[in-house]
Length: 308
Image (cartoon, rainbow, N blue to C red):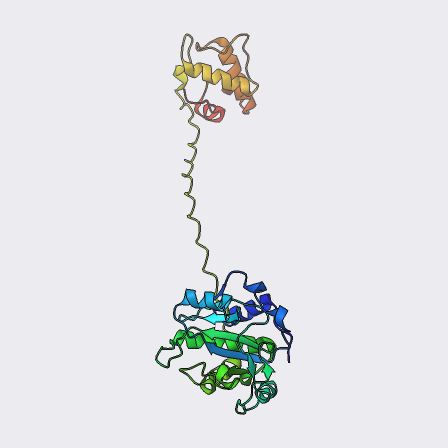
């Protein structure tokens, strides 16, 4: 005995068992609950549709027909193994059956012959219709048989039932032949083996495509070391020398706090340049004749006059 699974729990149980499940139209509210109670549930019943084609079979089981309103089951199992959910609640699939069979299902023991039709099966059984003509010739693809096994096992696992809680329509109601084309004993054996192991792991989500790697910005060119004026020689610095080198030198002397210019510095070598350079030499530690204001190679190198 068990409280019926909610729509969400039924859907989850089926998918957790590794099934591909399609929610058909308004299956969650499609039921016959206004005609009688739904539950307590005791087992799962397997049928065949006596129809061909997935789409038409699903619609038939969802809507029913003039003699038997839908839903005609809870799930339709297609040839490719897809399960289409068409009802949630009481469904017109089991009809009246044998009370002794119901008690055997509840006790999970061997089934007695079904020789009476006195007990409401729509109240107590989940129903799965498998798409098949039921003529003994229409094949049962391996994918469909596996889906029947998985669907029945999913419901049993959710309720804590064993494989003896799964029956065929032909074992419930006198005169019924479905499912025709395989035996329920063989199917129960398969279900029992499945229930002995954990459910199929959910299929992992495909890995997300990595976004294309952003193009690396071009490497910044390494800054060139500053270029300084090479020492032009002491003879370069004589009265009247006119050169941008003299201006650049004077600016460096001013920057070093050694400028002795009233105006400038300018491009023409002057006494102000010599006085300024002598101040720089003294700042560098030169004294006496060594601080005469005429650039030498060492003091010039230390002054770092920019290239012009």
